[in-house]
Amino acid sequence: MEKQEIRQALQGVLHPKLHKSLIELGLIRDIAVSDGVVSLTLALKSRRAPLQKELTAAITEALTPLAGVTAVQVEIAALEPAEAERLFPSPPLKGIEKVKHFLAVASGKGGVGKTTIAVNVALALARQGCKVGLLDADIYGPSVPLMLGLTKAVEQEDEMIIPAEKYGLRIMSLGMTAGQDAAFIWRGPLVAKMINQLLDRVRWGELDYLVIDLPPGTGDPSITIAKALPHCRILMVTTTQEIALADVRRAINLFNKSGRTICGLVENMSYFLCEHSDKPIEIFGHGGGEQLSKETNLPLLAAIPLDLTIRQGGDSGVPIMESAPDSATAAVFAAIAEKITARA
Image (cartoon, rainbow, N blue to C red; front, side, top):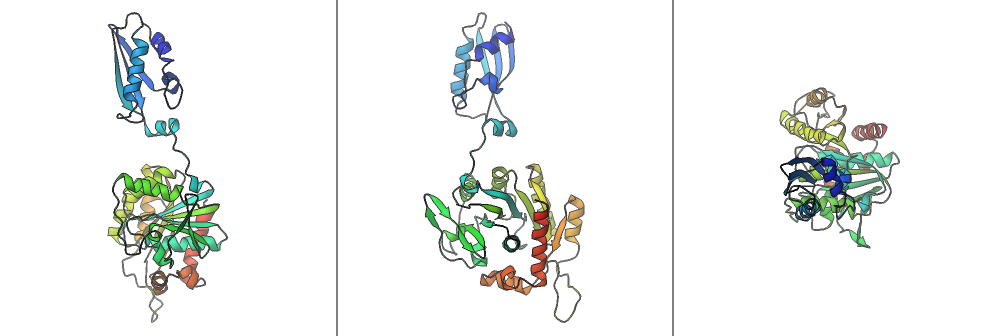
């Protein structure tokens, strides 16, 4: 029996969702014949795909009538991720259809001021004339509403969530759907589902940039964003301490493995300027951002000082880009935004 005869017999076995032949789709592989036994591999989205029994039965039914066939053996294999995405592309997320650029702010570690960077970079982009949205994707501890002084719950219209608007930004956070002190407990698949809803069911409208504040670490939220937004660029935030650098390295590796572009590094809390001296005081050490930049070949976009105005702005709901837009520290955020748009 010739393999071509087997392939011809399988032309009539269609994938029930794609309505094309399994042969045409390239899902039938490794056909072999030995002593009347036909063996082949059926590639599906996963080894536990619900269609495997149905398709295995259809393959067996198509081949059994052939002269000389005594048995049919079907082995199930999982498609490579790129193949699965090509054959079964994810439906477009409705809420972000009109967003041109995505910028995720990540750290790999908590306590480095990532949300402060995300908020002020978003405001700096808006001051450059961009239409900007800000998504608080830290679903475990959303703090964007506090930093922007937002206390009202968001509204819905036609099953879409309407983002809040303040300081020229469109803003969405889980902290705007419950009390500020409410605890959010998310596990496994629920995390990915919630992140996708924040992208899909929020009416972001036309935006030049959607800035996404990621939670610390390399867990489900970061992985979900990486999968959902293949063209999302990443801004990594660190301090100069080695303990922060170690976590940032792990986060960089995660995004590199997922094929995401990291547009640069920001070293936060880099130094402190005392009113009694012009010499910067490097409380957390020196040169961590530069060292990481050399190791990873990523540009160090800025070193942001410890500034009392930043802390006051975060507590009062008026960020430094609004409370002191002409200050030296605000100029650093403006420079970061300029470098980001220049690389868009």
